[in-house]
Amino acid sequence: MISLVIEQNLYASLEPNIREVLYICFPLTIEKGSASYPLPEDFKVRSEKSPEDWIKVGATEIYLDNTQETNYGQWKEIYSIEDLKNLVNHISVPTVVDFQSTNFDPVLLEQSIKNLPSLIPVTIVFDYKSLDTLLTLISLDLDLGIRVRNTQSITELLRNYTNLLKFNSEKLIPTVTLDQDSRFLMMAYSSRESVDLTIDTRYATYFSRSRSRLWKKGETSGNLQQITKIRMDCDRDTLVFYTTPLGPACHRGTYSCIGGKQLRYKDFFTRVQKRIINPDPNSYTQRLIKDPKLLSDKIAEESNEVINYTDKMNLVWEIADLTYFVSVLMIREGIRAKNVLRELKSRERN
Image (cartoon, rainbow, N blue to C red; front, side, top):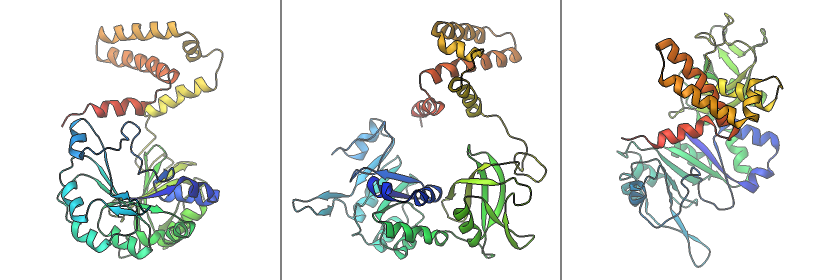
């Protein structure tokens, strides 16, 4: 994966259109000043302890700042490339190695890290020098964080976006299209020109192999697909379009090319949330929000009914009731589903 690391002031100085294109094309990390590559809020610690020590006490991600300021206001490397290679091989969690400079040799990096035996994700963060340097580094099949420090670098990256992609012998790239909640919609092919048009217009444009021409989705039916972001896969030979569909994706009139839209918990949660944000005085959900005791009593009641279910269908019914009341409680307390999922993930054991 290729992501961009941009200092906050530089990002704020960009034209809104450029900021939007950056967000569409790359995962972004916005740095405050010279702050290190951001980690999850629940683990952002700088320490002299070894990475192995932090892993033993539950660290889920390691950041290695490979530079240190000298007395003369300059930066020097803490580790050699070979040191980093050996160190990363002994780390068992996702790791970020930040060079904080342009003074490393990409060829040496390739020689030292290309054949790492570790299966742990390693992100190399480096300053953008030139497109040639970037193309050398992406050949390593490593996750890369590209730190851009000026608008010229940003312009060059965006202008050469399709050069980062691997097109097949037909000069096309498979493109998977999802909705904003990552539900599958369809699969098609894109050419260099169609990718450029998709970015420029913010609407999905593909290359039709049967008609041998560019094809803007919805150009005749009106079922356009508004682009929210574009991502390349780890090998850069497949694209993913995240979209807001303005109609069915399939020519048969279904939501996706593999059937209708499936309800997810997130959809249900959002629906309950809307009832709270846009209150209806006759809404039962509003009564629960305004009466904490009623909500607590209903959670207790439904919990008891789950425990004392009579058969499988009754259990499904009671779990649905309990899910609704617990969701109202979560929304009232500002808790989102991802907070609960993150807590569950933290309890995983190898």
